[in-house]
Length: 107
Image 1 (spheres, rainbow, N blue to C red):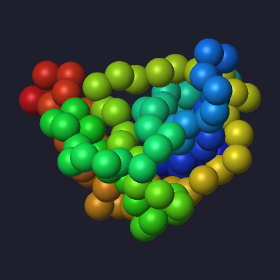
Image 2: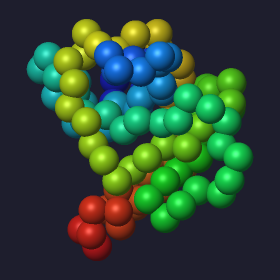
Image 3: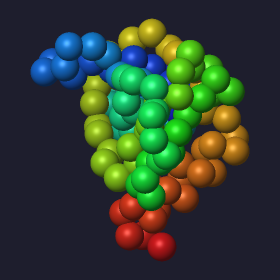
Image 4: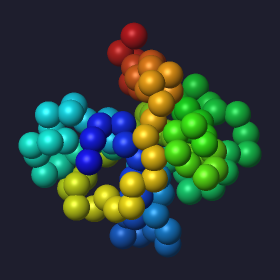
């Protein structure tokens, strides 16, 4: 398990798993039991991304293009993640970091 990998995450209240991008520092991912993730939609994006969202796609290893919500970070146990789905590309990583910073009002 590494930063920027995409896994499945199923919240207990949800009927199906959603893609989750690990955004924790690599040392945290390697050494700690919890990681920070961004959640993505379980459906194909049918609209353009809002200012707090990024759309992932096949280049990230996904079979469809989900919206990734960058305005809310979740910290969960690594054991809650299953089935690696892909890895975020370098270009999209920069886009996600910029979107998180904007969405949080950090820039």
